[in-house]
Length: 144
Image (cartoon, rainbow, N blue to C red; front, side, top):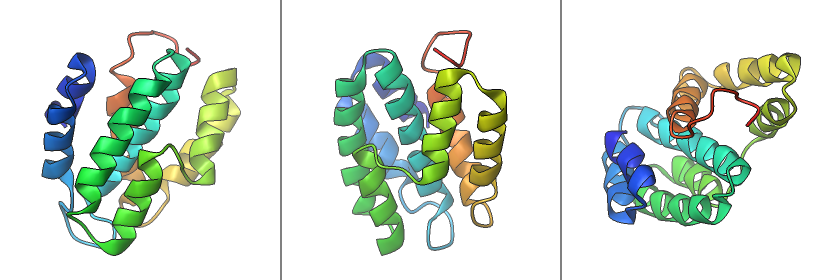
């Protein structure tokens, strides 16, 4: 995760791909924990990146990270990563983004609950990745 964070801060795609490579396929299951963490991180990068006028940078980072990780994991997880790499996420992520964008705590709580309850640990790992991405954007208010 440190390489991903540093790569985003410095704009270094080599660090991004190194971080994605380290996480790819890490852990057991159809969608290993490292992949879930990366999907959530990408969701955060896309959401907060767009809201901070860094959408183009988020797209480049997303594609690089997803392409690197997808080649090193399960087929199912690779599909999730490829979609995440171009900013495509499951419905609860869109609801979370909408709730954060409008500052609606009820929508945020409902979406977060749905995400956190995805799979045995997938949702929890993905949310952890999202929160890591959140830390990259220096605004005290989540409704950016």
